[in-house]
Length: 581
Image (cartoon, rainbow, N blue to C red; front, side, top):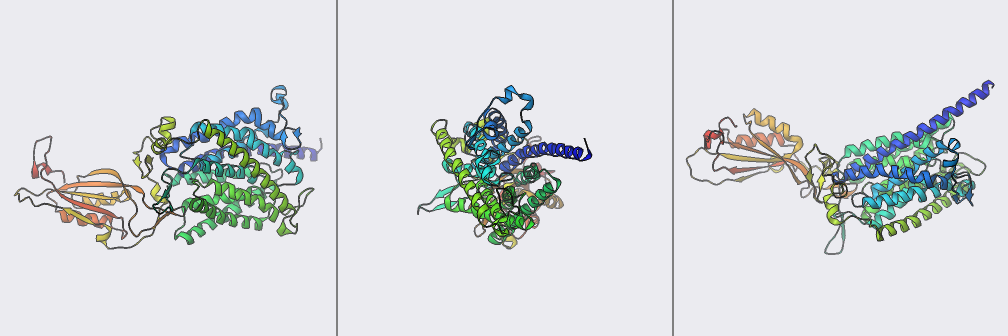
């Protein structure tokens, strides 16, 4: 074998290994989807979300092995519409295309898991398993075969979807839209007033940290998602570059857009903006230059915000994680963008409209989008309808309010080592939801920011006066408050975790562009009983420690205490208090 042949063999083996490593990166994206969905929803459903993201891959493996893979990638097809299954898995194991199988399996799992987020917090676990299996064994394999099987009718026609904006993300987005509409919104999301108008209420997710971690994992895995099919180093570098450029510009665009629109940059929406850019560049990643990637990313950044708010505020379709906007709308945009920015000519493909190729490629992309959307919409509507009529699609109101962790899995809390608190819609929430609320700060005087209310009755007694001071404030201010009390020699206190209303009159808050009318946020209640230290001194020290100049710094309540009894010694009144302050 000559040197050239050796080089070609080595190159082939190298990219064969990269092909499989790319599949591993795509599999790791399951963790990213799980974290995004968990963080953007409430803690009382965290275990259910994790379970669904695990099982859609595992059930998908079973059905894709026996049914889905042959429908998608069989060498023999029925008029390019569907593969004809064979028994090569059992009769010719050694020559079975295992690389192709594992690669397409992880992509199949992605299409199924997208739907989980849009239908989160109110879907029966059994219903999810059923429709996830149908997606993996029938819906996705058939339309993906049109796109990537060399005998598929869209492939033969010249339709381009390099890594799956249409075949994966748009399918997941369309399914999410149909599922969320048929399922209905979460309890408390949309409230109909006496005048017939519907008010939209924000339901913040419980952990922005988990959501951000999920986005970073997904971005990391996306290099395998888009680049695994590359066959040359130059092509792989191009794919990595266009992927990064589009995602970066989309993220910046979303941040600036929400900043200008709402007065503050929306964190969760900006995270969605990163994913929107990644979805949009998936189809054209190997077919566009840097300029094309920039435009694709900018449009994606605007599109995700507009679609999220249109669905929520106008159509009243409840999508907790923005799956329809991220995957559906930007899957369509990314697929169409090939017809606008494609820089290559080929046997059956032409350059994009903006690169002198005319409308031909754009027309092919539009045909592919319509065909895949129609197939997905019709079949998934039938699937959801059958499930709804037989097994049932939605949990009961009581189960939804209690949380799917306990009702579906017998799990009291996914955060066993942390004290759960209840939110305004029932069930448990984590303490991170307040980070997602954008509040318009209004500087006020110290007396307005930390009001003091006295409930004092003069008993006329000659006994030493005993007073209870109750302070309610933010958890983050506790250390400052404790230090302030120590400085005035108050060392005895009782601390209780409570929840309080996080919205004051005249203060506007937004979550993903939706005004928050009321939200119960974690706070602390500190109780101090004093007799030797003057009450006025305690109050002034507390006000000084808690004051930031904003409404909501806290409240201080002052009460008379009739008597105190020390159980250990039997002492009462002033004597019982000695050593406690």
